[in-house]
Length: 292
Image (tube, rainbow, N blue to C red; front, side):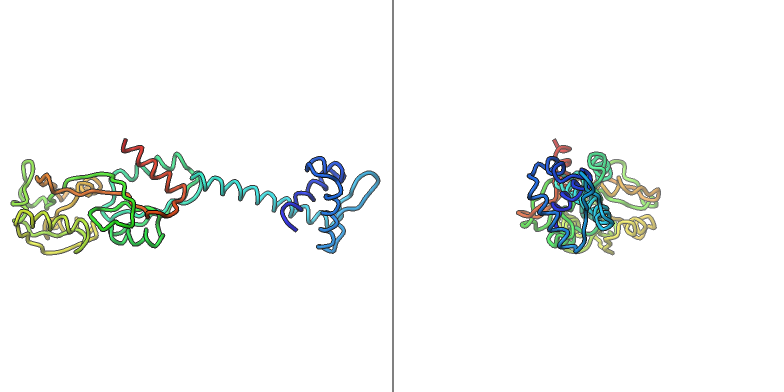
């Protein structure tokens, strides 16, 4: 049996006449009678019996009718859900987030949820280089990463550019306004991220361009731990502005570093020439609209 035959049988049961069912289904009567006979032969059971002008449903027919209703209903629900997923109304948004996060993410996700309330989410946080691997492996479709990185395989949508800040314990001296890299070298530094990654590279590059030699005492990719170390006066650190906005700590003070060329960019990436779900496409569309 197939879904079409089940629909035919539902019409026969509800109309109680082959002729009336044929009219309802917009087919001729002989083929409908043949489908009913084929179903009975396949199941080895009589499904309907004639009683006067009308058909009566047998016990076997009643059992089939019950399941036929369930199957056809499930089919309709499946078609509806697939269409919704195709339109991005339903489905799953898989998104990678850089360890330093993105300051506007919560608001964007809230707006996206209001537009597409049936979409579910898988959000993973990790270092930018690992997020690129997750996108390549299709573990997530989209990722918000820190630049620079090798991104030949990806389409990149620029989200934001922000300055770096020196963060120190409140036990240290307070700078009135801003601080230069020449002043930063006087502090023992805990570098965020780890060697070879975007933010780590940018910080070392900035010192190198200015022919400065920082006092690096530690590397730490866990932001909470890094902030705790700075608050305990283990060392100072250099972090993007987002970290300051997202992490409040009464024992830490932040001072903007003055250098027009010392900043960090955030981008949304996805694989080139690969299928994107409608949920992912709608998320990209929301972000691009925000940038206008």
